[in-house]
Structure formats: structure tokens, C-alpha cells
Length: 336
Image 1 (cartoon, rainbow, N blue to C red):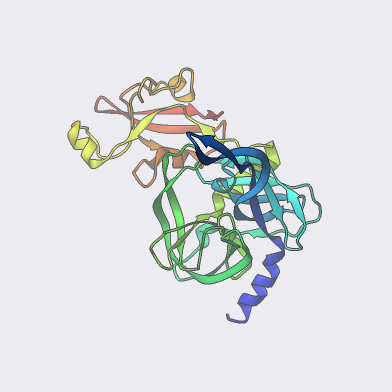
Image 2 (cartoon, helix red, strand yellow):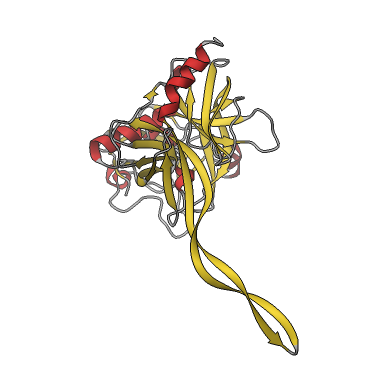
């Protein structure tokens, strides 16, 4: 195995890229002033200058210049993103699409005949399996390689959405003891067959050898959508709900301990007007127990189940309405 790892690294490195993040920021200079006989200085903006403010990683998945990375790497709409290839060539990146639910982004650069990485199957991962993480550590140390094992599967952690500032729960993550540091985000997690099985995404501070990667399968689907439709098409049911917990069930004397309870969110009604759910006959206070014959639980949310379907698919919904179970069918729309 020790001889195999350098071979895999040599094979994949040409398709791993670094992403630099720059912004035009004001440059200040001090101007003297006199106030009550005292000499003072104050800063005034003199000009603006392009300044590097961060960095991340990515990898090429199509020879025409398509690149996968994390959404949070390209979160600032006012920033400029430059992709640096293994051969030092630089390209300005265009953001084609982003998937907030899975923290995935797809970029494009104007290039041809680029080396690519093969996307594997994250469902095939096993605990203890050897994996390789590659990335632009600290935005400075390009193509840093670390080796470790799959320490855990289907992990959940809380993170923050850099665009909205809201806390988000990241699910179904791959835990690894391979070193993942700031700047590694968006880089590939590789198996010994040289296939991408995850996208490096997070590290737990104040902990050693605890890093996380997104499974590659949702990214494969997003990529297929971009290549087929030119955008990511997200299925849309048109409901607002709160997940039922044991405490919620006991507090409101609900008949079940899991599911999705359709209730208003502030001034917003639980059913989007003329949305798929409303057309299918769902009502306020309904509890969706199953979607597509999968039970809705805290670890298997309605949103995650719907990701397995395509826009236009008909989904069977098992509903609890006033202690009576009924079955409805909804044709999924497209989330705008």
C-alpha cells in the first residue's frame, strides 16, 4: 500500500486546482489635521487595490474546464475567483451553479483538454478504508497531500452559512483523520483507486485528526444537471414544516413521534399557493409521515428524501390528518 499511495497522488495532482479569492478594497493613507492646537492624523481612502482575502481548493471533472468545489469557498458575490492549475496557469472562474443544501459549487474556466478526476461512489466507502486528501492548505501551500482512513460515515455537524449567516446542519458527512485544514475546502478526498469519493469541507477546531468531507454522490447529480440542463434542477414540493421530535410530540400531544408537521412560518402559510403539495390536496396541520415510501425522521428529513427524485416525478406521500392516515400523490415542481 505504501508504494501505491505515491502512484495515486502522481496520477491525481494534475487535476487538482487552487482557488484564490480577491477583492477590491480601499487603501488608506494618513492625513494631518490640527484641532484645538493639537496635531492629529486621520485615515482617508486614497484608492482601491485588489487584495487576496482567502483561498480554497477544487478539482477538474470535465476536460472543457468544469470544476467542483464547496459553495462556501465562492460565497462572496463581490469577490473575484482565480483558478490556478498544477502547471501554474491561471484562469478567472465563472460560477455556473451552487447547491446550498449540499455545499457544492460548480465553476467553469475557459480552457481545453484538461486532466480530469474520476468520480467514484461514496456509498461504497467502509470504515477504516484508506483515503487521501489533497488541497491548498491555508490558501498558501498548494497540492498538500495527507493520508488517513475513513473514521466515520453519515456524520452530522453544525456549520454556518457564509451567505445568510444562518446556522446550518451538514448531514451524511464522511469523517476522516486525514489532515484537513482551512484552504483544503473544495479539494478531493480520494480512494486508492484514484477516484473522488468526497469533497473536503470542514475541520473541527480544538480537536485533532477530526475532519469532514461531503460525499461525492450529490455532486455527481449536480454535475449531470449542469451538463444536461445548464443548471441544477432542485425538486420542489411547496411545503413549510417543522420536524417532529419526541419533546414536540409530547408537548402538543401529537399522535406520532416523527414526521413533518405542516405549520405556518411567521407570516408564511405552510403550503405554497398553487404548489405541488397544495394541488395534491395537503392541508395545514397535516403530518407527512413518509415520502416515496421512506419514513421521515430527524436523520432522514423530507428535504433529503426529495433530493432522490427529479423535477416532474410523482411522489407518494403518506399523511396523518386528524389521526387518520391517507395517501396522496404530488408531482414535484422545480425550485426557483
